[in-house]
Image (cartoon, rainbow, N blue to C red):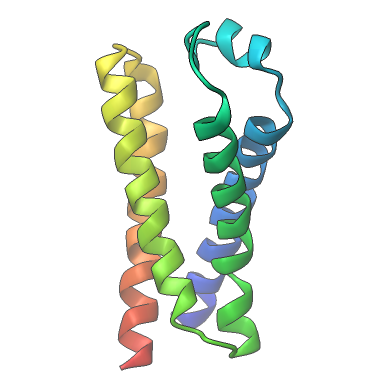
Length: 122
């Protein structure tokens, strides 16, 4: 089971790299064009979320593998769950229902990692 959870951790890290990087590197105009941001809104919250997602890519794997503060791995998984819940709420409010299945799958995978890693710490 440990190997399966570690594979899921890797999948989650890979999943969050692309959106995290695009939130950091994308221009304000690009985010407005994609509907992620209103024209008169600040881009700072999107940049912060991108940084947190990229930090999560590190936190979901390395603390557990290296044994350095391993509690950070399940905490990161819980944070990924929170990000997915927020995404579900936002996409539902925008009536973008095609995104929901992917968000639910990532939420469930994050919840599994959080559960199993917390259990292994006890």
